[in-house]
Length: 296
Image 1: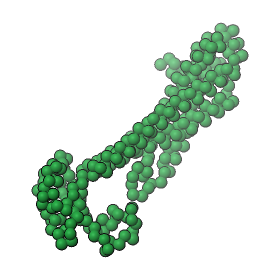
Image 2: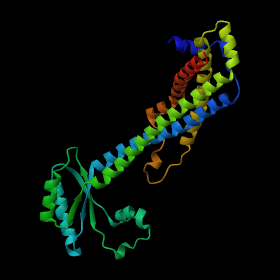
Image 3: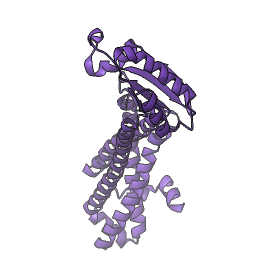
Image 4: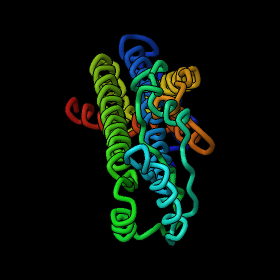
């Protein structure tokens, strides 16, 4: 707490030790701005990936599809049989037979809009809505195989798992990227502080001769570099927020259309500048103490 109060209050006489300009000042501010900009983007990607994974899992876990591939003269009979079986099965909330136009829309991403449906014999698709408990899948498949041999029950498991795994993997990579960004920021600020202390070695020696303690000198460098990092990170985070807000929405949904911050998620990018300042405080304090001890 005392260190925080000292940081906020400052000491003009002590801060005269720290150069106000120079390559260390530019390096600290530029690095903080760039890292904060990247951190905002990575945060948006990580949150969006987690959100999309949850949406995909929820949307696919409460639905299923029955595909009926049978000779033309038997297709409608089997479809009616399947709908009767589904209506009698506990865990099935409702069914809806898809029209040819709806199936054409599903095929558009792969075959375009010029698919000649009149020359193709599409299977009959029945969209199934599941209740919270869901059906006995094994028993349902056995009954369909016995009464409607052309019907195949698909619970979307083979589609759901890879999509969710991919989104969760992207979120994990984003978190690793955040750790790397924090590490690069801390190392850069520490190196800049060490360079500034080394460049002002003569001034520090004079201060020691007149009785200044290393803690007094370290405090000045810590405050100046922490505030520089805070200012640079604030500018970078603000630029990152504007850039994220300008990302165009991708038609058709998917991960790319979900990149951004929603609701309480806006708190996370606002925490980037304070987090960068805390990181700079710790890194500068440790670097200053080590460098002053070596020069002592």
